[in-house]
Amino acid sequence: MLNLKLFAVPCAYLDSHLKMTVTEDEPQPQTDSTTPKPKYEVLEDLPGVGPATSQKLKEMGFHTIESLATATARELEPAGISEKKALDVIRLARGSIDLAFIRADELLKQRENIDRLSTGSEVLDNLLGGGLETQTITEFYGEYGSGKSQLCHQLCVNVQLPAQQGGLSAAALYLDTENTFRTERLVQMAQHLDLDPPEVAKNVVVADAYTSDHQIFLLENADKVIKQNNIRLIIIDSLTSHFRSEYVGRETLALRQQKLNKHMHKLIRLARAFNAVTVVTNQVMAKPDVFFGDAVHPIGGHIVAHTSHTRIYLRKASRGPIRIARLVSSPYLPDGEGIFKITQNGIEEAEEGEGRRRRR
Ligand code: GTP
Ligand code: MG
Image 1 (tube, rainbow, N blue to C red):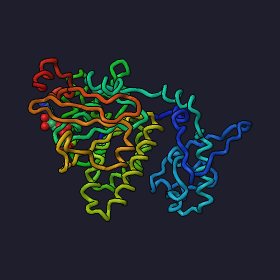
Image 2: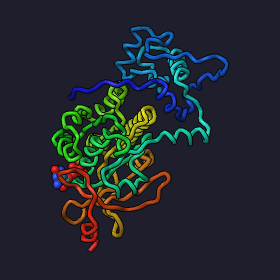
Image 3: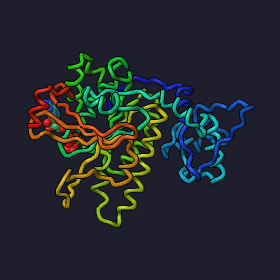
């Protein structure tokens, strides 16, 4: 693991990014505008949470006030606290960070905080409306070698650039489920951008996930590391590979989908709480009954399809470094297609001629 610089995300910053949807079974915050809201910084500050309870909560993955504010009472009960106490703790945590229903005009204002991260290819960035946006999940899916992991590596470098160069001046978290993360690749990409490779490598936190449960556990416990290291890019490469190999057979499908759903919602919460770009990769499966159009579809069914805000399908051109990216789903952008290439330098613009050769 790499040695990282520590940065703290100011609470006021989090406040403005934590206005999220409240589900029915969760307690509503007390909204008394006349009394100032108490501010709790750490779990132990919350009334009724002593050292023993806070220790148990941390062991369960709740390290911050933000994580408690977005928890359900049932999730907190294994810490040995009653449902009533759990509801109280959640209410206090929410009161502390101004979690509330949000009007559409405020939502628009919140969207003004959305930042964009460049992929390194202008064509790809344009396809995405100016780069990958924060606060949402972007999914890259495609067959082996289509460039999903290469894009993830490039984003880990680009996120460290200043805004004028398409970055977020921040660090990255890489959850690697297939053991394909390579620091050497970051170094090549950093050198091409005239960045200091050791410095770039220091700003990428990598965690290997050995099973789907381990992958879930890592993300559940990520809030502290994200906060401490100024991480604004969270990658899961790949989102589905462990789930696909572990849950085989129809009888396991419901449980798999339930777990994937919860996992992706945790990712959305992190994306909003830290105004972060979140990226997941996904493999494809052959559709044996398709004669026209694409004979493949991404894994994960409706859950992954509906939870990813933006989906990009990557294909290899018949040969060479060219890759074809198609935007297949976006909440507001039209579908479209563009090409880029993968070279030793990383993700680069494909030149005119290269694109034409592909189409011939
Ligand atoms: P799976 O994880 O197997 O599903 O594939 P993926 O979509 O993640 O593929 P990945 O991003 O790992 O792309 C691998 C491909 O990128 C290779 O087959 C090469 O074509 C290209 N590539 C990777 N590294 C380099 C490099 O250093 N130089 C060049 N020129 N191409 C590279
Ligand atoms: Mg890969």
